[in-house]
Image 1 (cartoon, helix red, strand yellow):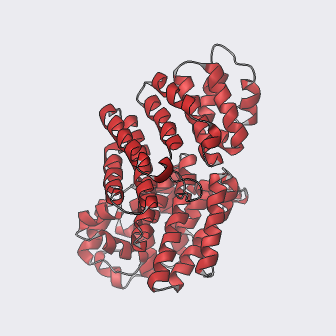
Image 2 (cartoon, one colour; image 1 turned 120 degrees about the horizontal axis):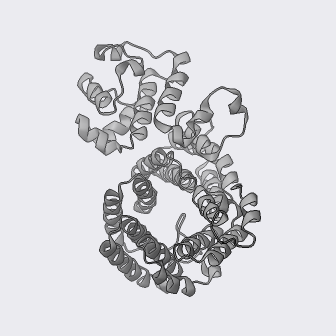
Length: 425
């Protein structure tokens, strides 16, 4: 790896660790977002002034980059043997919660790393992969998407590093329209990586979403850009930035809503649902209700009240059943779970197109009943989730819910065995 690419990798790692977008960093140092992207890719050498501003904004001393002073940028070289150490130092400092410690060379590395650690590897120590045909890449991506929608997250985590490496190698080997299509495949692979990290409540979701959006923008495909914006907004919400997340989702939805094709308008509808839930989590009731009303109107305008499994979106769907599912989460987040009961009753789980969505129904119902103080129904919803997607109940949020049931004053039959099965006790 060249010196400029190593420098770019270090800057990207530090930026993502601080949860900044390329546009935010560029604004602080007088560069555009695309220029920062080129710096991070090693294609553009920053000026002395820009480098000083970048390191100042990121609180990253030049010495940490292997550069003794600004003027040495053109001459200094980070030795190869120091490169891996530099990346590990940045990852450990900024992304410890994401499982970056699995990158160490201690005996713990011999154990199978979790999905978050494998995503970290794909981000900063990507697998060396050979380019493949665009057709084969799309087939591999479709297979990975199937792992997500059937809630086989462990298998998806195993396959993602290879998929990401292959996608990026294929993109580099192509040009013109084929390269744009490969950009879209890269973006969707990073969308899957972000979705997986979000399931684990891992901070690695932030840099993964950043990669997804950068590739999506390069693809020029507004649908893919909408998919990437959605997962980035979720990471923003999880990071305590719900207002900015809602703004991003609104703007992206508006840009897609006027499109003539059904898929673009369906993506816009899902973005409005995500924005509504984000507003609800921020206790902005008026915004949440308005956004859900807008999402409902958007779904009603789609053929057959939604984009059905025959023409799927990438990781979600825009249907009346999906809308009802979001209403459960919105009301629970706003502190009115009793209003979510009506929407839960409208859903026939079999109407939801994938195991992942059916598991989301079980999860949202469990949270709803938990907030209503009904432990028996909470446990029934958790059991349903286990039946449709066994890996889902091992997620941190559901393990916490199981722990609440386990240590509740009134025991519910079967909870202790369930807790043992899911690793809570």
